[in-house]
Length: 201
Image (cartoon, rainbow, N blue to C red; front, top):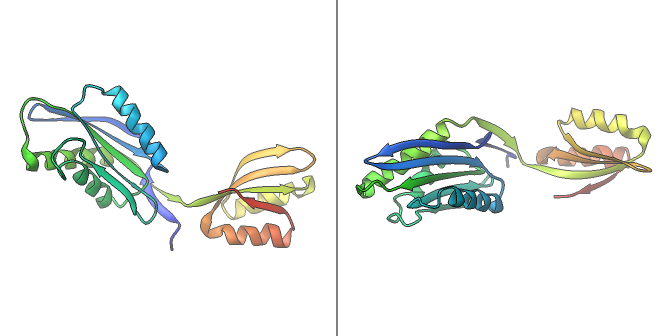
């Protein structure tokens, strides 16, 4: 199973278009979990309290099994599902797409709503830069000062990233390691160099 996935590099906000008087404001966010989804949605509810609808969809995880589409009062399947399908068509994950609608007085009908929400998701995702990310693990290492050079060279060699450094009577590093290279990492430092290693998540 692969440990890489495609997602958007950074948030894209306030991509606006109008359809028969209604204004659609579209947003896309890279997210890691449902708590982040909730925070972004709460922020948009606060930012647009007078909007008629806050429709959204998200996909989380490499397998895409954690997903949701929400119509927020629009006819069933007319808003959240078209947004969700655009995320699928871009072949990305760990993404939340939200379309905020201010009703303009003219009903669009279900086909019109599907078209509008699909278009909103499409244009906001087309503005995003798609990047490849990797599933990773955080590892805590404890070692002697004279081993610091060995650690830094080998972490760089397996494309890991040192996130934190603490120095007491020993060195304590927190390192992010790509999941597919974790076994190699542990074998190198634990078995070969006999360093103390703990997987944090």
